[in-house]
Image (cartoon, rainbow, N blue to C red):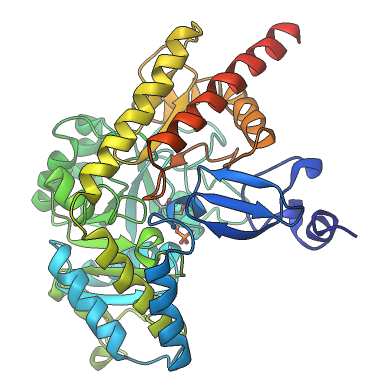
Length: 428
Ligand SMILES: Cc1ncc(COP(=O)(O)O)c(C=O)c1O
């Protein structure tokens, strides 16, 4: 049996989650270096998803491999505070404007989940507000109103999946980039509302001027906790993440992905008085929230994260990310114009996403109105041409290893796949 057959036999849909790749195309990866990955059949792919953004510094970066290997020899996990975890917490505190206190977990999912729980525990209010289309991890609130599920009138929520109808009671959904409506929802539900959670860059949709600052003001006015989910934007838009990049400071922040340099990590932090809600000295008081993670803060992931921050702190890294991202989006936009496509390129920093729509894509309804079937066909054509990406979450992630030559090669693949999928559509 091939690895593909074995994967299809053991994993639902042949994957560990997402992708939704047709069975005959499922690649099983076994090696990565820089911006390239290889599968078990020896095929080389240009990686444009980079572990969904976790490998921002590139696969198998020598400094990260060195730091993690050295630490693994000295013990991989103590499930206790350790030297590398202390150093990393200090480093994050110095970079993240709001993170006075920090705790580590093993994933972005846990980080956002704990932020929400802390807000609920600190305010003693049950409800949270999120934005339509946002993803905050695989817990029930994280996926609420993410898919184009059943039609709802905001702020009503859609569980986006089976078995979690309770979110309809406790989760409010607001339209991203619509401050007036969001302010009204916050004001109307303030007595019950613990937190507003937002991806500052909403999937690949940029916030309109004043939106994040307006959220900050509205949450402050109503004493609601503002949470930035920086699992994607953290250490990517700037070393200080979206807080630094957009100049808005939340009460709590969640990190993951890029921080670990490819190793599993999550971190959450925020104002000391809020973070004290997880202090065991409060146990089992009315304002205590349980927080403990067997693998969170393990010294290998922390050593990898310290090395990652060191690499990202080198001169020119962030101007380079922004230049590469802008160049990629411009070049892809040029291809769309050259092929007379009604589409646009979304994104900021080292991120891009194509949306087949003639209308500006600024929120969930405008994204849902785009031709997503065409987007998926394009992504599958790219995969077949040797570009590794996620045909379900069509965000493209650049890394330190994506230089101008690599980007030019991708853009050529993009142009070819675009033309081929248009022809097959016309022929269909
Ligand atoms: C914005 C955002 N938040 C949270 C998560 C969840 O992170 P993880 O997959 O590490 O649990 C993701 C993952 O894609 C994400 O994009």
